[in-house]
Length: 559
Image (cartoon, rainbow, N blue to C red):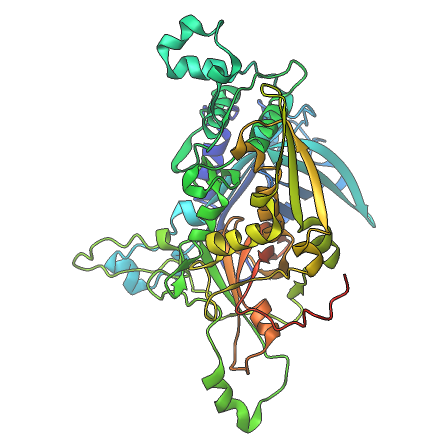
């Protein structure tokens, strides 16, 4: 493990920052947070004050297992690295010491941000001993990053230093050559395999793709002691034999293994998302169907929905028709259970009340979180994507053993995929009338396969061939569909792979537009932005369904 000690202390950087943050509370947007950001080069360690940080941006993207960002620091006359006097004297006077940038990817930044709820406690609550502490696996953002680039900027006479960073594990995999083979994994799993490892064929050297990915991470990041969330780790539905090519870095190996992965049979061999969870401090590999199963719980928000946002009417007063609209309005976004507080099930953890204690709530619910008109934007399904990327994928393959050509069409045919998508990802997962409807129109040209994509793969396994066809269509139906971007007051619990819902604040008359935009969105990108005295989140969510199917003319469509 890269252990970067404090000069005169044996505390690891992350532990040091965690301890310091518990003593350092800052106020942003009239809310209090425990906060600490430090940088370390192996000998020197420097804490950044809130006043010295102009901007701090951390980005979480669903398609990248790591987080990244940048920090923009005030750096007048290069005072970060240029000393005004001896460091020992500056330390005695409790003035900021200098820091020397290494510039080799080993300048490590550690960030720790947690909501401070102690300031909300009343005198009565303190006397009663009622705990008000947010659970760390929901609210505590903490991670170590490697600085991969540096830039100097000027605004007038003001000088800034911008440090660009990404997850330390990403930097390590970017550098390392990993001598990895699934044959060695098989040897580890089966002791008797060692004797025949050199004589068996490649098929006997295969392991499940999820197991291959986990064992690779264990080997490549052995010094980081990687941990895995077993309940959120997909073992895979297909097998792979893989040995690292000499020219590959660890990142190339991991990317290749991920492109070969299909989920286990429980997830119907769909695709999975690999993430390093900075809250759990563990790696997860979840099938997309498992994510969607956590969106809804009956008529209420599921475990993975954390926020409910409301938008204004945009249509003026309804006058005397208002009471009628309230009877006609249907519920398109699930209610957040008052007991579980924004559906953050883990955030409650309320023990059996003892004498002198009462049940507590961690955070303010998002039920009344109304969006300003300029803080959200809806984007329609792009027609060019619909017509070119959502068609039948005929997957061609050649069996080198039997010398036969094969074309997989039925399972990759757009009507078959649409029906499967409806059944696997929408029915029972979202609210609809009577069921949620897939936001996708089958034109005559697609039905008659006049619009078709031909692909080729060397994979002999049927499940693996689904990666090129059906699973790619699943991805396109989800991630190229309708989307909403939000800019809201920041909170540390927001992350990708979760859901937020969108609803209207006031009663309204049913219409197809609201059938399209209201409901639950799957979060694919989140930015945590701390800028001077503000903390905000920019979020992007996708929604592949409508509350009910739209009424379109089908006989007048040009083909």
